[in-house]
Image (cartoon, rainbow, N blue to C red; front, side, top):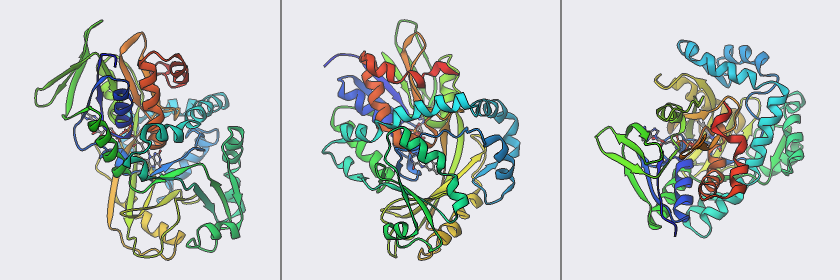
Length: 415
Ligand SMILES: Cc1cc2nc3c(=O)[nH]c(=O)nc-3n(C[C@H](O)[C@H](O)[C@H](O)COP(=O)(O)OP(=O)(O)OC[C@H]3O[C@@H](n4cnc5c(N)ncnc54)[C@H](O)[C@@H]3O)c2cc1C
């Protein structure tokens, strides 16, 4: 085993996978989080490993769609208007990324990362209880009209171009796969190579167990400051005064990573993209896998704790309280989609996706500085890309040139 110590700041799915992959390289790894590992955004996602989702959020039609989306109270997008001034710089970058050449670049970067996303979990978790949380059942997208289905033309073309298997389903095939769906669903797309989790928190807990069993260290600490000594060690200071030092740092702090990057002189435009979920009881017949409703833009995933209905994107900044109406509106939507669901909300949740304006995560070291590394900004795809990110970080830190090249398009210096 080679010597060397690393601090991983943030124990969401990205930090957990990075910490485990780094530990496997023989490094002394200390993983730090202010709370329970996996309890941030990684707790509340829709649980899908989405291998065909290489289309970025910034697409050519987006500027024209935003006003309509924002004025529809049940629409997928909402904005706390008091947050608008702070959002402008990020929003302008998002709009720059709607240009066709940027879209092609971002799509290619995501497709390359996604092509190794599912096997990376196999490599990291093989034979462990964590692997049992992942279920290899693809994701199904459904709509009620041929007009709505046209919205999937680009997705289908993109999948095929990138070698991702995709099947177009008619009404009979949709209902054969998911008999519980309302009869009006007439057009569907199935991505068989995707997967989903029976419980995202369970995956995090089991990865932590593996990490600890293999000699990793976990510390609960709210980190308030950090820095590094040129050509020396990296340090972090906790709110309670404790200090952590190591040869290297990986910033995997989710939506807070932009602020933390600033301590190290790095600018990262990471905007909290708030999402919500509600859980409906699992007391009736269950879906056989996750289903995404393309007109309401919601996903329903059958999980151990019930049917999780996830969706919506709210720009509200870090401090605003959750708009619980945005979560509660998911329940009637899900019942329109699956009439047999029990219309009762058992739990509700809100959390912040760490969003970059080009939808490409940030993976790699600070320019000219192998001390401070970033593994953040995964937006809508953090669960999908957690293991692949950890693998790349660990391989590249050990000097693997192929891994270095593979993280080029996700470099922190591109902004
Ligand atoms: C509604 C919804 C549905 C989603 N569905 C999917 C999906 O189906 N598939 C998919 O791939 N992705 C999905 N996502 C996105 C995915 O959940 C995120 O991209 C992912 O969880 C990000 O992981 P992370 O490890 O970067 O961040 P987090 O899970 O947020 O972890 C960051 C950690 O850093 C810690 N931290 C931050 N600052 C500090 C500090 N100063 N000191 C100590 N600790 C600190 C936090 O406590 C937290 O635990 C969804 C997101 C939402 C909101």
